[in-house]
Length: 349
Ligand SMILES: *Cc1c(COP(=O)(O)O)cnc(C)c1O
Image 1 (tube, rainbow, N blue to C red):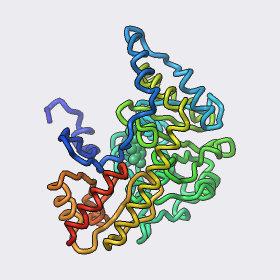
Image 2 (image 1 turned 60 degrees about the vertical axis):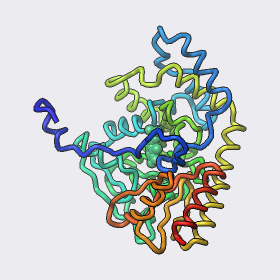
Image 3 (image 1 turned 120 degrees about the horizontal axis):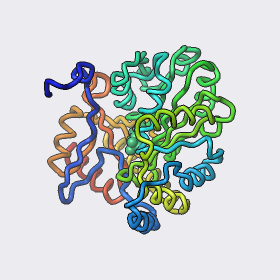
Image 4 (image 1 turned 60 degrees about the horizontal axis):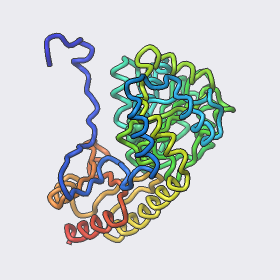
């Protein structure tokens, strides 16, 4: 730390992303990336956009936003785009966080970091002993509610009507629903944005569209909420989604069959892996995401993680009181998960 750093930042605990080692033969099940490549048209679209890199990118991301609005069944003025959904969430915390926030104790680890970064008061609401969100805790709570649906790292989803009730009961506050994993079996709240002008749905191309490295996120909400987010964006970095990423995003949206195929395969592989883990005595939470949250029976989470690591398999663990013995295991390809399960069998024997 230099002596020049603002005092406000010197006390900040930054988010720690999952590690990204570049080791040959590693089975990487620790950062919820897709095991599949982007849609076939993405590479060419990005390469074509690279020909024009001497020019600034389209500030309005017009084509991308039109395609997103069609894919999501909303109007273009109900869509904003960002450099990954992390950026959109950070915009939303800045735009709507001043009245205080409320989010679960076990959720995406970035929420408390942004709350601290922007000096926002956060009420941390414990999940119940089954790691479920009790929606009563958020009804008429007088705060900006932030819910990952499905939640991370549990994978547990809430039905759409639970989100509707939270939005309905907090008409004076924004309700931010982080749908990073919604395409793996959850119920999206996107269809509710015409009914609730306080409801903001945030999504990403990182997980279900196999484009984590392209950094593309988006938000769906009332025209006014979207206008507020663009106000933050224009106060910070208007050119936030580069031209290659805009082209890649439109190419991905132009191939819905590929998207369907990948997400279906991941859901099938998830259910197979879950069954195998249960046979091995693991406690496995019901996941609607592209990962499983599971606890081994006969050893600590840390031990199991380290043994996997020695066998070139990476999984994620969070060193927090209630979940330290759970591992978050990304659903890879069927072949990767067969190796993972075989390895788990050997380690447990
Ligand atoms: C991965 C993830 C994000 C952010 O992903 P981006 O790559 O920034 O789009 C947001 N929320 C949750 C819960 C996530 O797991």
